[in-house]
View 1 (cartoon, protein in one colour):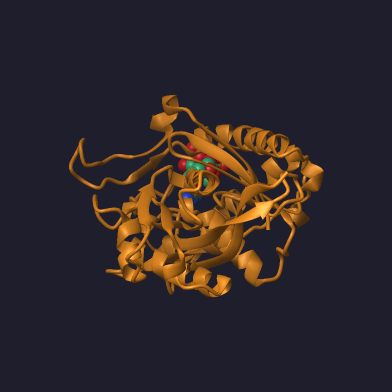
View 2: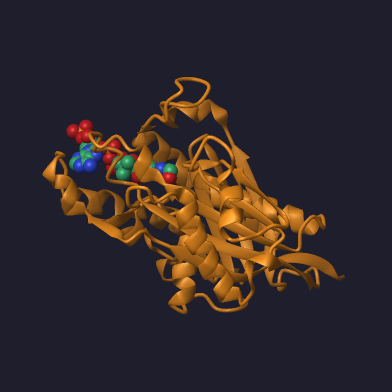
Length: 325
Ligand code: UT7
């Protein structure tokens, strides 16, 4: 049976030029490279320059993805941009990106699901394609988490980084089987009862300030492995597949221990997991498309490989997407 699928035709990323190694934090915090690496797997991260905006990072990642797909911005009908660190309260960072790309057509909007942002954005883009609302969508995760760090809080500020990743999805015909290329299934969840274990303590309607990130890391950790593995399994089952079919897990890059435990729980060996957390830290909504793009450029992921992405973050919000490259 002929069906429409949202098929990835290009992927790209951008990292700001400033690289900050773990040892840098030792200058003003009671922390050290050994602790950070042992507990998180992170060795370094990138921070945006003064005046470098989330939309600037998104623009570079978008151009990289457009080049990878061999198309121009005028070929795109929609932008879905996941971010929790927008340039401004409004307009959306997506419309700022639309202007930077010189697009006068289509529509663009932001989506906020914190670290699960890319899973949510890919799911929404898939729905827009399946419902015929758009034919080619630029799905972006772009963040400048360095802007919402408390630099005196060693439990959070060593964990995050800035960056952007982009994937272009195109409507193509498939046969309606798990062998089709493109997005095969999506699985989303949230539970607002956990708002207080990962949040930013400011906001437009509450404090009229931006605020800084607060996290009860151990609590988030406890939820992460179980929820990610279960969402990954739901998504695979919905696609008529099992963990044995997975070529690559491309997980949210928050903590190497979470990545390893989730893969182990799902019975997938670490040779089949894309890991970039050591170089990027946690880039929230950007982390999955960033990791995908890095893996693509390295030649790790190949056409027809089956990818499972999974992510969890503030909300709590979490989810998984299964797609064939
Ligand atoms: O992307 C959104 C989702 N977020 C996540 O997935 C993050 C989930 N959580 C985590 O990744 C981990 O919980 C952390 C990396 C945040 C923390 O690792 P942990 O193994 O859970 O450590 P902990 O919070 O239990 O802290 C252990 C000790 C504490 O000291 P005491 O109380 O045992 O004396 C902390 O104060 O480590 C201390 N500590 C540090 N020590 C040196 C916390 N941060 C640091 C630090 N350097 N930067």
